[in-house]
Image 1 (cartoon, helix red, strand yellow):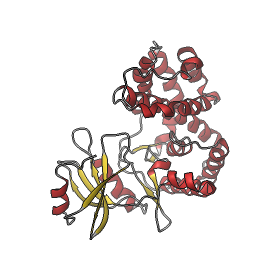
Image 2: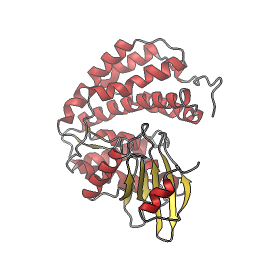
Image 3: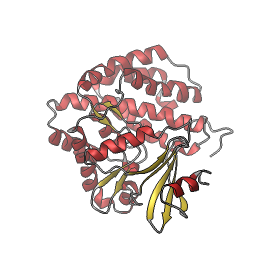
Image 4: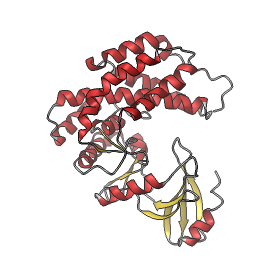
Length: 328
C-alpha cells in the first residue's frame, strides 16, 4: 500500500520532513492509514481521499470529545483539499488483540468501556445530525438492497418498512434527549493507552441518538464473540451506573437497536463482497445472523421476527452467499 503522492509535501510543510511511512490496519472504508516516524516521534497519517471521504466530521468530533475529557486523537495537521489528516498515534495496543492474548482481562476491560459510554452519555451531545427514522431505514434497506438479491430472494419490501417503523417508534420517542452515538464503538476501535485511558477511534459517522446504540455495538460485536453472560453483566452494569428509570424499556430498546444494527451489518458485509470483492466479510455473516436471531426473540420484535420468517427462512440464513467469480 503506497502513501498518497502528496504525503511527503504535506508532512514537510507541517514539521514532519524526512519521515518514514508504514501502512497500518484500516477499516472497511476508502480511508487508509500510515504510521509516520522521524526524529520528532510518531504520528498517524489518515488518507481520506475526496470525493469518497470527507475528514471534516472526524476532525470536528475528535475535538469535541477531547474537549469533554475523552481520549480522541489530537489533530496535528490537516489538508482538506487532498483529504490528509495527521493525528496523534495511540500505539498498537488495541482492545481486540489484547483480549486475544489476555482473555482474563475481558471483564475488567469491558467494564471500562461501558463506564466510558456511561460518562459520554452524561455529557451534552455533540452538534450532530439526528439518528432519525430516515437514517435507520436507509441502513435497514441495505439488507433488501444487497443481501436479498445476493441470495436470489424476492421479499416484501413494503412490509419490511412497516414492521420496522412500528418497532422503532418507541426508540425514536426515547431520543428526545439524545446523546453522542459513536456508532462503531467496538473492540477494534478501542486503544489501550499507556496512561490507562481508553483511546477512541473511527467515530466520524457519529450521530445524536439513543443511549443503547453504542452498548449494542460493543456487546454485540460484529467481529468478536461476546458471551451472553458477559453481555448481560455489562448491560446490568450500565443500568446501574446510568440510573435508567425503566430497565424493561431500555432492554426493549437495546434489543430493537441490536436487531436494526445487525440487519444493517448483514447488508453492509454483503455489499463489501458483491460490490468491492471483499469476500472475507462473508465470514462474519453467521455471527451476525446469530446475534440478529437472538434480538428477534424479544416480544417487542415479534412482527419483525415474523417478517424474517416469512421472507428469509432459516435455511437461507444458513446458506453461504454465492461467491462465483468474486475476488478475495
